[in-house]
Length: 168
Image 1 (cartoon, rainbow, N blue to C red):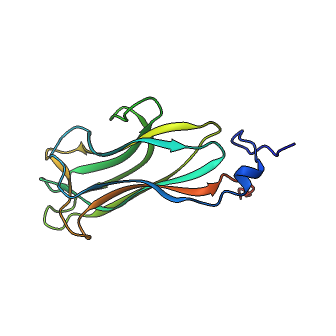
Image 2 (cartoon, rainbow, N blue to C red; image 1 turned 180 degrees about the horizontal axis):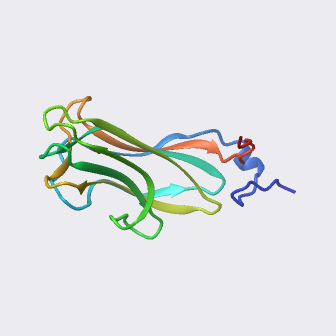
């Protein structure tokens, strides 16, 4: 009888012999987002196949966050949906927030999250930006060239193994 993982997926010879597949989906943006005071989408990937019993790493390459007013708090989020295109109200995968000390040298951020499922799914993933507090307009700055482009990537990391760690 196949072993059962914590996620509910069963380990079969087919799964056991399937190594990590690497990057399975990628989106790229080479222009800045719109300036906003509320949460808006910046970059989305749709119809990503997530297989039961496997572990996926979803990440965004480093990106620059900006506000038009110093000391505003800016928040970037990584959201996902299993029922159509992800929106600004979809489930949260990861979040990054900071106060913009000045508008001349804004900080950079990156987001990363793990996704696992006990059933096969199609997932949509969305990168968003918002001004959390303050009076300015928040945005993600991007441009052409390897140092400025934003990549949203889904990577198959292989079998989803159970947590055997010890909390101390």
